[in-house]
Length: 461
Image (tube, rainbow, N blue to C red; front, side):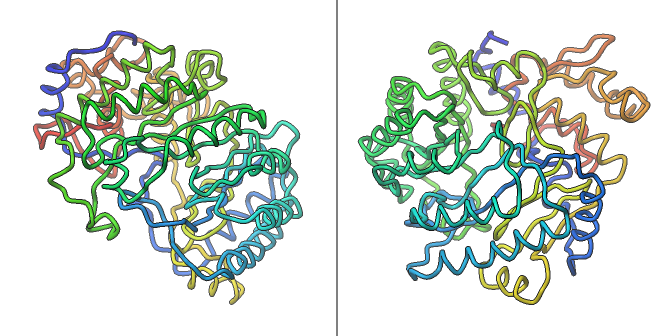
């Protein structure tokens, strides 16, 4: 996978592909989930979990508060200047933790992630309080992966040390772009000094892994500004990087309406930017992981990718996913005993549903056998860039061609385009297909029923 296709080849491919594709952090994708008129489905899933006490779980906690509402952001985040708002929110999370634990049982936690929003927006005492609440309801395994997202603008000296004291061993720093003009365009002024200071302090606190998030396709971003950003980030040498493509959807995210669409890079420029970033990171020794992550060769994530055992959850790529994900807080998404669930996003109704004695879920989906089968295929493809035909035999009693004959037949068209390579034992993604991995995955998506066809020029990454 080290060969980098010429840009002209990628541009020609993009012109022949659909304009958009899901990220496949879940299958089915969230838009296909159903409204949950009450919490009965989630309670049934938790009862199923309680019947399997040996299963470990992962925990996700969504902390929505931010210093400012960045113009580019697509996350569920709020800016609430009321000093009591975080404590009131933690009151509600405490109820949810207790209620879920009472229904699903006190579980051993193999992974935990705090996301947002800005988790390190909380004060030291609030961080301690949330940690106490979680440990009061669940048992963190001694070797658990415990990670948190941090905004360098919200960090204060000593905060990384406190997080290590609370058991966090992995941290992800939101950087996005180091260029001041780009930062002004997205409403997120963050000095390089703030970023470097926090990264250095995280290293001094001896986190097992430090990740940096970058975004390409931002307003006023140019090849020159992006080049300077990636050069500086490579100099800082984080253990991992994530490169996310900005999605401009002002109809869905009103905060994005302040961005002038005329200042956004075009599809060709986005594709060229990502291709260049891949090359630059490879030259610096990073290995491309799955869709959009990069890691040093000695990182456990890189080892899992090389050995074909990478996994992916709503919390990102991992080398050892737990079979269930319990999610807490407004807008959080969980996966419990074969069912997806998502909480109410708005803070007020989230709290009101808990106060009324309910679980705050508003939509979800109980997966059938076909969903589970396709989900297993898609996860392996998105993680390990291949689909062995025997992949699902042990679990479902069928090979992939036996279970999905129509989809496998359509793979010939992808091979003709140079996106995949087929042999008697399965399929694997070709070098050019890395840049259109989501489009390859669409072949197996029965909810979209989409085939490769000419479409609006775009890139999948």
